[in-house]
Image (cartoon, rainbow, N blue to C red; front, side, top):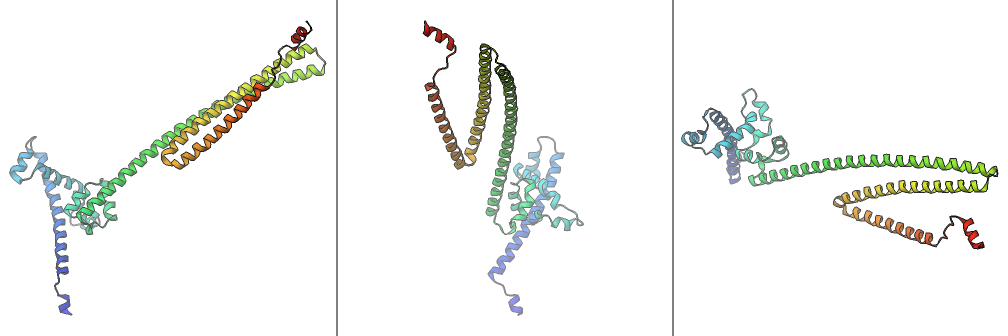
Length: 299
């Protein structure tokens, strides 16, 4: 039993080597944070223009390497450089399980995304290439989310503008209808006058004049009603065209369906208008002064 426990095999040795590598890399990360802390301190103390010279002469670092270590300290120092009392609390942070290379790769993510990303991914068992791919995909998701939020905001703005336009159109339609109702009230008043004159056997000429005035008011009423409805229909078509246009990118099939329905409606409407136009041409013209025509015929 003792021989089995102490038996050395290549897989066992490889596992030990990988464990030592991970531990060394974690130590390297903490060391880099400590170095970055001191580099930042030194940079703040050096006169302007002396930073690069000091790095080359005293620590043999390039400015790029120094800047990277300072960044590692600024990003991870608060979670890795803790006192012994806070060690247990620090161990709960996902950052403490990163290696130096992993920490550099994860710097590519926004700070607020890192802990969640580490918690969601098995970073300890991922190769550097796999981790880089995962970071790239997360950044793509964040970019798509941001784009979607912008599109939603734009759609909300458009919806608000369309709602304002709709409210204005409704207000105008109500005002037009009120004008039509007022005109209709005048027609009813004249109609009552005509009825009274007819019941009292008033002069036929006077009745004819009132009838003519009544017909004129009815014509004005019909024209006012036609104008009001035409405006509402025109506004409705404008709103429909805007909706279909915005639908084109989101749902092309629905867009084509609505275009087909609109075409059918317009075709039916055009056919009705043509029949009405043909009927109006065939209708006999109303004589404006029949007495005059009768006298001319007698002459």
